[in-house]
Image 1 (cartoon, one colour):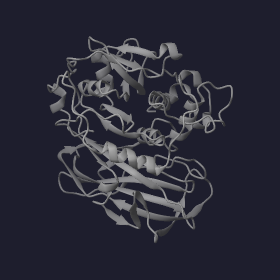
Image 2 (cartoon, rainbow, N blue to C red):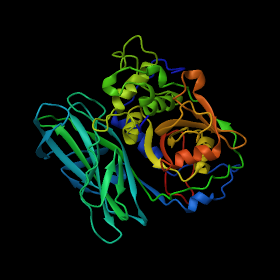
Image 3 (tube, rainbow, N blue to C red):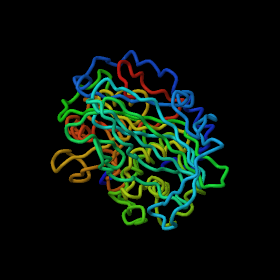
Length: 434
């Protein structure tokens, strides 16, 4: 894919703001202390990959600036919103009146010059509403960039097309699908996010943003292979789904097969936690299609403009609909991934590799593929559910540590962290990337 359930019995979808706020309250508390059995010695990659993640929940939103928005548990539209026109570029209905409000984060200094930023979010968006997340930065030379949109999102697709607005090549940076990238030779020292909330004019509905995250990073051109942890050797029982069995399904959402690695991987992790859409929700899927919850996920992660289902924040926003805390971040090495596995949290990871660079892979090469890290062998090899396997029995793969780490580092160590509040994340220690 170019960045592009076993036990799944009538799982109840949870998509109300109250549940998201419970998750926010629990997951923003101090995370669990590391296991005494785990080695906590730093890996060489810990010091060569500057990465920093900042997350907001309802209380932290109060630190920002409100413009026709307010706090009501989460971030919602205020009573006197701006009236603006919006022309959905893929809708064909022309300019439509919307009420608009905005929230601005404080300026955040990273303490290092960064070159990339990814924002992710958790929100409830009733039909007729959507949100947009934008970012701007200040260069290390003190120049302020213009706003760049990282995506317009809604959980529904009725009279709205969630989209990646494109590169926006106007000053010091550009957007690659969902990632702000600075121009060659430019680094940013600080950033600011802007969240725009939109609803059809005359409606009393409002989108509600429960959580927001941003990960800023400056990545090296090469990374050493990390040493395995002392207590490596654990595998999580994540259900195994193949994207390949969906080949040719729903061309309007990129047609299944190799195009659906991201929603298939996200669906595996949802099923691991016992979450996902109900049979009623995916009843529209053709009865001849197996694992219809994957078709459902593909539809609701699809991004117009990018024309694919691999937009990273769209996948975590989709997962959050089902009562889970979900965000995008970057990890410095597989040592950090091992800590998540030890805590019982599988990770969705983005990789790319050429011919001969990933032994035992079900596909020869990919410049953008998504898999689930489910564990590690006692010898430190990486166990994954690779959705490119031809069927469920061929999804589980064991990859050489050095080869997988190279493939994953090529995408900057991007992962989707998806978990219920009842399962705490590993203690970040001196890290700042989750």
